[in-house]
Length: 322
Image (cartoon, rainbow, N blue to C red; front, side, top):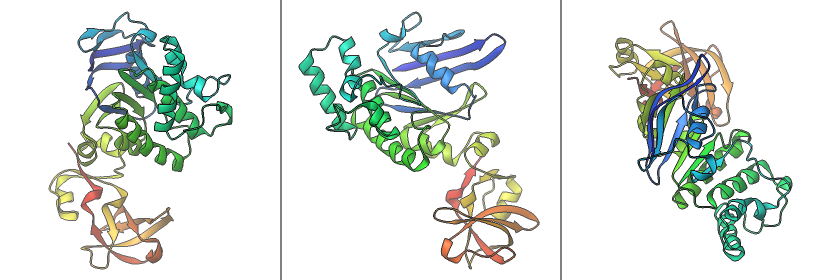
């Protein structure tokens, strides 16, 4: 088990990470989720041994890793751009860690074949990595990281360099691969869809601190504070009294765009101010009782700007804050 205790990282007067406590259990995938610049990549690099902690400790099964160099920690690393060796073919990249462990040739070949099958690249052994797509390169990078059977896999924004559609598919594939490999993993991402797809638990990070840790569904439904709710897509925050009147929840809530939907039988009424087409719905801005709210409508029956609409509340779009 990985355990972080009071980790602080300073760069001169700048505190990049402040007093972080976090654990990752055996076989568990934990996502560090937060906006750019919040310190999540610095924290991951501290775990890897690439960045020294100013204070606090990193342990594995109770053993202090202070002073243990990167290559002796038994951790696998996957970065945003994969960092593959362009002069090696796919098999040569995947086998690199095994060669460092002096694994014999036949065992290396079997392990490479096994991993390429796992990541959906069977038969790619002799391909040049420069001929692969971005998604294929990241699969090779993951296979290379898993090859030596690391006790922990560290992934730093592994999908962020890919286009949106490919990222969504690879997030699903990566979640499956990590579970099939039985991997223990710490994943850094700024994308909550990615974090919630991959992780057993999500640790939300802001300004160098972890502000909330929990299962994805719990974090999604009950963000710790207003800032976390906004980061997780709640564009509107209502005080408890107003929330009780408008959406029937007697607590401070955050409303996502899907919290209100056009429905002829809805209890709320408003006027459409704006409309924007998305892939599978239309996003509306609606004036309700003098205030503006986001709402959604089906593409085939989207109201026009200026039209009066009825709105129903969708509980899945409501987050209870705190």
